[in-house]
Image 1 (cartoon, rainbow, N blue to C red):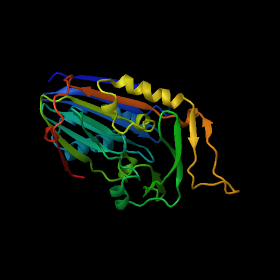
Image 2 (cartoon, rainbow, N blue to C red):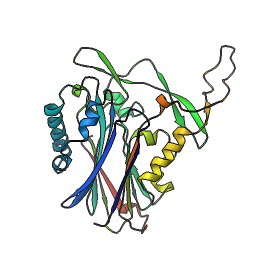
Image 3 (tube, rainbow, N blue to C red):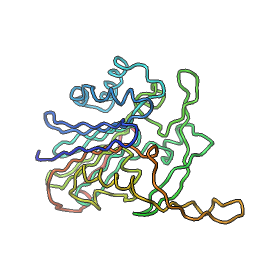
Length: 295
């Protein structure tokens, strides 16, 4: 296989993002982890024997091996964990596995696939898990200049201390395995002559993207391009909008405000990008076949 893989990062927050890639026999692989909590698991991800782990043939076997290694090497993961997203790329198919919200984007010619985040915007995950009644404020990037204030809920779990533990995602590594330990998986089949790009990144990229299909809009770039794009957006001035249904005490809508992200509000950015360096040859629907299993 002729391909190029690039990695780039800018750790603007807690410095807990990690990526790795490699090639074994008949496949290449890409992995991104986004740590949260104290950073214990995020640091341990850097020394996991990934070549041995990723060589397992099924998602269940891969996750079992990861959790076995975690149990031996860092068993105390109280309020600490990480997302994980994996792509295994063969000459005619791609196998995707993920827990959390480090999204995977795949472009085959002009056809597109992206993984579903395990957050409270995912109705399937919400139906399976308890969520909080209280709502926290976050933001949504609307375009190059505007942010909209939005409201989200947390998932609610009970940890080993019988405490309520609130998480932004319903599946993750760590956290004493209180979340569902089951990869969501997809297999994408494509023609070896197709143009193929894959992007895996932490939410430090996706939180500041309004572009739904970045590999269509920004074709044939690399990891540094996407990290630089996100970095500019984390540092720029924004026009911050409050929804019209949220009113001041006198009933008037809130005016737009100019604001920057404070340092403590910025997030780590990590990106791994894959391309097979081939030009677009077709946009026929049958050039990309998506299979879902073990969801």
